[in-house]
Amino acid sequence: MSSIAVLNALDSARTQWYHITAIVIAGMGFFTDAYDLFCISTLSKLLGRLYFTSDDHKAPGKLPRDINNAVIGVALVGTLSGQLVFGWLGDKLGRKRVYGITLILMAVCAICSGLSFGGSRGDPARAHKPVIITLCFFRFWLGFGIGGDYPLSATIMSEYANKTTRGAFIAAVFAMQGVGIIFAGLVSMTLSAVFLRYNPAPAFKDDPARSTQAAADYMWRIVLMLGALPAMVTFYWRMKMPETARYTALIAGDAKQAAQDMARVLEVKMEAEPEKVGQMKAANEYSLWSGEFLRRHGRHLVGTTTTWFLLDIAFYSQNLTQKDIFQAVNLTSAAKDVNALEEVFEISRAMTIVAMFGTFPGYWFTVYYIEKIGRYLIQLIGFFMMSLFMLIMGVLYGYLRDHNAALFAALFALTFFFANFGPNSTTFVLPAELFPTRIRSTCHAISAASGKAGALIAAFVVQSYTLNQETDKIRKALIVLAFTNLLGFFFTFLVSETKGRSLEEISGENERAKASADIDVEKSSAM
Image (tube, rainbow, N blue to C red; front, side, top):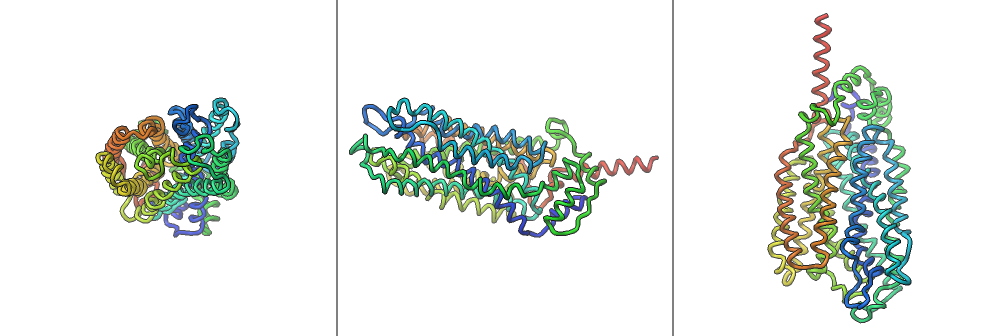
């Protein structure tokens, strides 16, 4: 328990309306994040048909490997950069002060992505260059804004929550990612169905030239631009949130303002206690690069960065390559057997089904169980089960592809389930709890950026193994990912359980403040 009244009040507060409001406001950011990052997977094959048609018409147009990786992966590069920049700014300038900038970036760049210059009419060989260049440019900055939301949302929610439900609240914010993934599939599926109704076309094998509808060039743009809506709706409410009391007191050193802000939020009288706040602030001013940090939290930072890195190699590999794997195991039609919009519809439908029955439930199982069995055990179970299911899919891939695609789909969905009822949720929660207030946002950013480095491996390396749907390459990729998850299982032993303790207890800030106070008492006695 903290020695400061305002922090004690936050730790022991019953669940109130402001908690729910904070979850929704921060969660809508993650809804937007997931929608913007994952909707591109439903559209990348359409971009290939529109802008990279082959002269011999032997197969539908396909994005060249490097361009496919760039279109998919450039937002992840932006996300990694944004996490580090906004995470650092969150500790230097305040969580709230930079929180709205991330939404502005997301909204503007989502709209601009859909307005990428050029079109599929005329000579596709010349049309694709400005479209791909401007699309990648705006998706980088879209990712930059998305990246800022990771450390800021996690830190704000952890510092607002009480200690008995903190993990569930942070996990609930992150669970909105699952809703965003579902909506990415639903929007692509709905719009492709609407466009298909008014723009029917023969399958590629029947008429290659007419199989790619000109109207499809508008459809993908609308899907991308709709990602701006939730960001714009949330902006006003995000700007009304007060700064967290922990930042105001322990970093800015303004005990009076922290007490006033939390008195208004909690609707109780609050004592400022400037002496205690000053003492705790002074006792915990060591930096990220100090020997004190290394001694107290070095092991934790290695644990959070390595587990998130290993998790995202597997998690993003699944998400970004499922469009290729679905066709390889005949869960969607072969590209030649459908027209352009039908292909988008089938990929979106398959992604939505997997998300609804695998991805989405996993997030909310974590929300329900995280305060019952703890972060540590959920992460261990998740990594182990992901490793097991991916190994089974890899070893039996040939059989499952040819004889039991339904079982493959079930195993694929179960892997998603245990990713989200497991390390995909807990790697987000733990860095928001383990580190001291002064560098909490920065440490979360470093952990998250490490994860995005893993996602880049998924986008630029693993995805190249599945792009041409070659059985041996997909099988090898799945087996390698199984061992990647197993490494994540063992690196989990570097982190600690945080369930039921205050942030100051977990980080050792209370301990240092008490030791400092004891020294002051001894000095006073000696005088």
